[in-house]
Length: 437
Image 1 (spheres, rainbow, N blue to C red):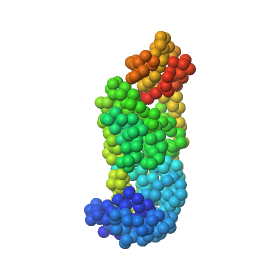
Image 2 (cartoon, rainbow, N blue to C red):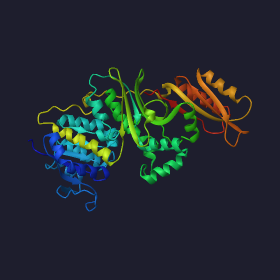
Image 3 (cartoon, one colour):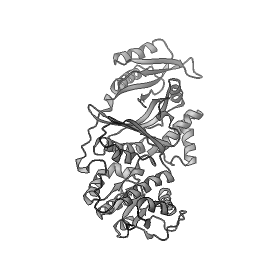
Image 4 (cartoon, helix red, strand yellow):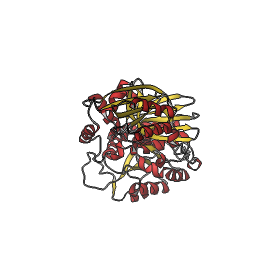
């Protein structure tokens, strides 16, 4: 049997403790699967005395994760610290430069420094594995990096944030407001005390930027993603979507267009009958469309200690199964130095269908003015519905428009015109409609 694989874990929060526990409890099974023992020989965290529910006393303790990354007592450095700078970045960079394999769950780090770290890993001939960084326990990285050889990806999209999906699911099922649902999600631990990173789309954007690089062979461009969150979604939108046969999901979408690669994160209406519309609660899902395979949908737990630990341990096991002299594949599917510069497609040229909700003064000529603004911008309407606003039937009405395929620029110009006409009593709502399998 080959020599044991020695693992150092930096960060002993929920995920780190789960990784340590599984490596201990499943030691026999992992040895059988990997052909060698996998043992934790070093750990690092901020608090040495804290009870984490797992006995790691046999591992050497390091107060400084960078020193642990340098030690000759580990073969694999597992980074579960978090953050795109500071000890997370410095320790991962140090481990790679020292010729250690690295496993990380840190999407923020990869979104900002992934290409530079990949160049180091490939130069040193070591692995940089990051399955847990995108969609938790769903094996989407392995699928795109290893199982789709020969396929050309045309679009990748999905539900990549469990907090947002949980909130939207409950808003629809229970008829409660966004604010009330967010407070409950925080109480239950599904949302952070400061939920901005999740609900405004930043978390989804980091994950999408990694998938975009894998899908299209471009350098990671997390700062070039069009982004909207879900904080402005109301019960009026939820009900209108249901009446029209749609369900609202926060999607991350990347697709190839004639003008470049389009990356966007925003609330989206998907047909109720589509598979992705059936993904509820904290579950994640990723759809990949290719020329050979067609559409593949992967769905499962997107977060949590066990789901993320499962992905981390899968990455460790892949390293354990490799042998000296084995040529490792590139980190992002293509050699990092060959990743193409990212060419951004302009969102205002994005084409698709749109849901537009307008709250307007109930007076003669408003409906005709709205229709004229749509016609002036060559927007064809699939449906148009108007009804009284509850409790204020005499003062205002809601007009709901569903367009055929048109451009973002045309929709924004039409809505801006309607706003300038002085017909609106509230901020207009525009939600894209996405083709989904």
